[in-house]
Length: 159
Length: 159
DNA sequence: CTCAGTGCAAACTATTTGCAAAGTC
DNA sequence: GACTTTGCAAATAGTTTGCACTGAG
Image 1 (cartoon, chains in turn brown, yellow, red, blue):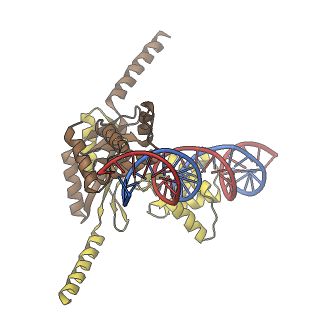
Image 2 (cartoon, chains in turn brown, cyan, purple, red):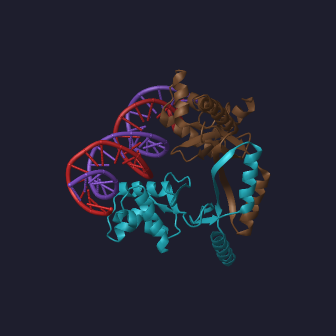
Image 3 (cartoon, rainbow over the protein chains, first blue to last red):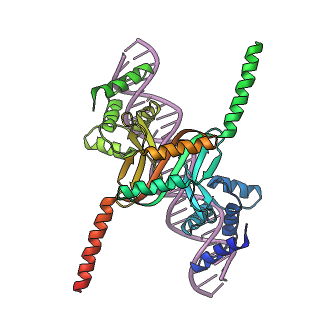
């Protein structure tokens, strides 16, 4: 993680008279250092693994702060719980979600963005944000499936 | 509601050896007759109001069936609970959600649909479904806001 | 008459909150 | 030292489940 990223977090805390506790720092760096889409349980589990004990309540409370200050986005993939992703650097993007392996890929498509703005203008709707999630099967999984089919066909031919 | 809509529901039940109970019929017709985006509590409340007592469990179980058979879509607007909308007739669409008045408007834009298909093809991703929700302020709310501003400005001038 | 469906209450999952103890500035 | 923050456990919200009773076909 770039030094200035942590600095900007510290500064945000300072500005709001919030304290830089070890828990907050750990949570922030853990998220900022990866491009994963974290669930609360993931974080707790990882910390446990490293013998760092951070309570569930603290994780939730810290994530709220990170969301409020725009470091992290709270994303709903319809799983019945939220995930959190670091956004300070890359900014807005949408998601492709593989229903097979669970991989979440980010993308940003200017055509889609533009058309959405147009469409809102046409309807007098003033957009503040949007969520676009495309569910399906990713390339890797499709290839594996194809391989499996081939194997199966071969087996059948030999039967 | 069109007669054949109810018929197709009955038939789906028959095909699966499920029974047409009064509860299932009520829930189905209630949803199919409106274009609302129902929450479970809405449904229960409405039924209570009309002295029809359907348990929470039955509502959930019936909605699952309706979703499975493609009559209803379970939609997540990030409110921490799900909403359900009738889709048998109008098919796929996306949503504009007013953050002020809560109104949910449906739309279908062929440009957006096409571009998404293209984008998936480019990446070898095989889409099965997508969710696009645009949040913002609807035209009506914007106009009311404008009116309120005018009133306020007038008041200020008179002060 | 039989098996599926209902209602109830208890269970479960994700998240939030009150409070005493601990830690930051 | 003052006042935040933490951890814990209890509370809450939405949803699911087990089970005895009811009812549709």
